[in-house]
Length: 138
Figure 1 (cartoon, rainbow, N blue to C red):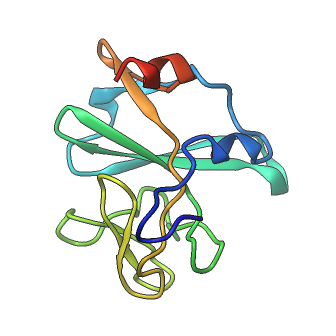
Figure 2 (figure 1 turned 120 degrees about the horizontal axis):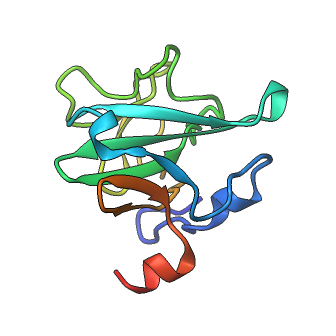
């Protein structure tokens, strides 16, 4: 976990059980309405890998679905990742809020903590989990 002066490791998600491979297709960008988020779950049972993607315009941001304060999923119901105005990611357990662009905690119990990123890239109309090569070309 990073602090206010450093960002989290963009590859930490790979150490989680059931983590998908870099390059995995997630969905079409159009499948996530602008200003909302969508969860993606890989595996089943007690070791599922859960991540979510927030869409803002033509850009998408991916994060592990894990609150840094409570180590539980951010959403208590499917798709419930955003505050009422759609301007911040919200943990629905304790109402901590995070910036969409970098996952930095700006209020609540997880203030000054980071969400763990899962880098995503857009290729044509589709979203994929980024590969190291994708990030080199940004």
